[in-house]
Length: 104
Image (cartoon, rainbow, N blue to C red):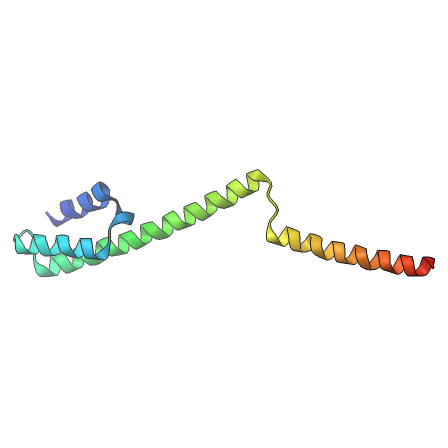
């Protein structure tokens, strides 16, 4: 019974969308109705919260990877690229100034 409830929670509602309060409320309701014991309820809450956190981390990682791939496809300059160019420009300015002084 508890496995069915967990599977329903994880697939029906979506792990990432669950909040601790919602999960605890559902567990309390199931305990009051006698569907699960208090220990099963605590275990269920912790397992669902753990899976929700794993899901959030996976989604975060996948989103970051997708953003990086999208940026790469767009050929946008990264901060490191811009900083490198700034350094090159500064070097060129110094060289030009040096050459101007030598030419005088």
